[in-house]
Image (cartoon, rainbow, N blue to C red; front, side, top):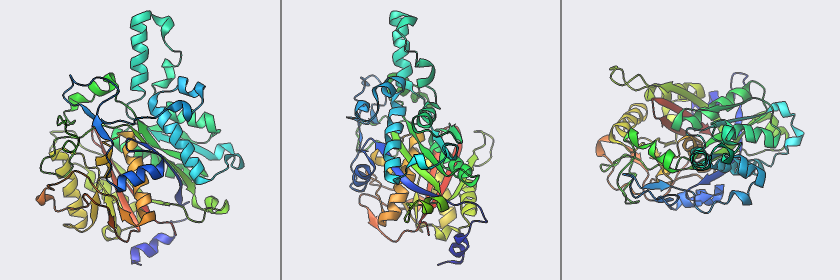
Length: 418
């Protein structure tokens, strides 16, 4: 064990935060183990948009969740009151709590928190109700229009449904939001909250949600699912959007152990967030500083990281920036790098949490999931990119990177819990 890892055995008197439950609803798997098996097998959930006619759009692919019936997972009342992004998160929350085998009635309600992330709100709910307004007038609009579209709707519904009355909140920082939610959850655990439901979900694949993404010019216009989303590839042309995400249970390590959790998935050892300077300022992006701050927070050195779950934007400039950060931190081809979101598309606020779920399962199973469809990695990036097939290797720590549109950066470090 390295000197830096020896220093990790204590955390300066602060409560350690460990992951005890995982729930996933993703384009290539509805359920944690189904999604993980599909990810390891390189099974893609990216296809032509089916939920509406996208033939007139320049981008026509998405990572859609097909065959998800909220009525089979949620009460009829909740289905009516909430949007698709909340349906995914509420279903994943139930999975995560079941996975954690926790009896919430045994924990005081003010020691239970909820912190989630969302970037686009209930886009399809809002569009549907506005169409009703124009078609029939205000009497036809759902009374839940006022709340179901809101970014914090998921947090509120989880809090109400499970009696969690401690610290609650929502992070709105696009793709970085899923990691920002985890970082905030760890903060409140350190401040005395025993258990926090955290993570992120998004669903912006309705016509209104989809068209709002096009002006960024970041979506690929390649309509072959096998050649569309190619991070760090010479043919990178943008990314494919997706929906879904992951919810995780984060607990105080001591109280988790007291209730019988002997082997949590891992510990949230480090976290940091930065914001890039405005374009044209002449100042460099802050991703490298963010990664170094996360390492410092974890009391680790770069050589302690065994795998990187990269952001993998899929555009040449963003990929170049991220590869430069990785080369500066680790050296050329010094650490395995993977982008498993090539099987799902970029899930916005759901992505960071889903990548963290993947990192925790990678530590559990000692395997790195593959980056699929990338055939021609850019040689100048000097990355040890895990492509096509999973790679079995010894893993103790993982770095997860997420970058959000507008300049958001977040980095989390998870490690096997002692």
